[in-house]
Image (cartoon, rainbow, N blue to C red; front, side, top):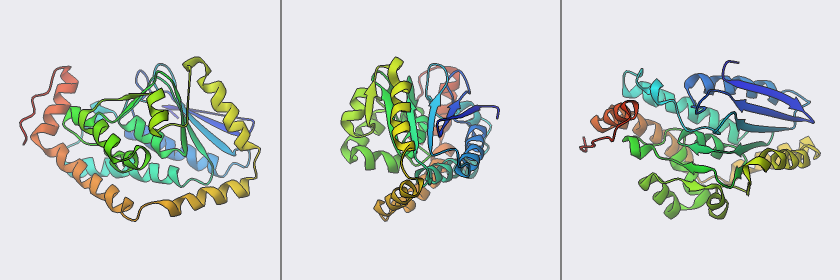
Length: 257
């Protein structure tokens, strides 16, 4: 794997994103993650999966530079579906997946974390979906999962202002389970993962399967609509302006077209 590192110990598989400096979620990272999940799903030595990021960030978002290579809205929608399908698989994975978030989980990074069964964060981490700042929208089901976790009013504020929240705020909002000092995050994550790993795999699988029945009926329709709009917004003048401004490190000038 070029951008992922995997290790297994004490029935816990640790998957570390290593695409420095920001651990951006390129299509290659998503495909590698899918391959790693194939391996750990059928490994009897693995009962819990822990996902974290190497360096300063968990993941600061999707790979914006990759966006500049996409030629049209349909290709952009296909990228959205690639992430959506992977994260849907994670949410319904037969083994628990825990996100250990430090530094930042922004855009696609937060969408990845939200697809895990639960999230542990450093108290000073930044979590948010700032896509509107680029004239874009979330594409990996963030528009559907965030309201489910924090409620529509808080999700609306986070999305429409592009303002991230801290790890401590994420716990209060229901986005994360626990917040720790960054130096203690992984230690506590492994402690919780270890507690789960001692449980019956059969019972764990049954509990995770039952979670899928709690989804709202319109979730999948919302995810598909997000992919379509992801492509349409990408093709807009504002979408192209936002990407160009990000690459050029300048303020975007949105005109509503």
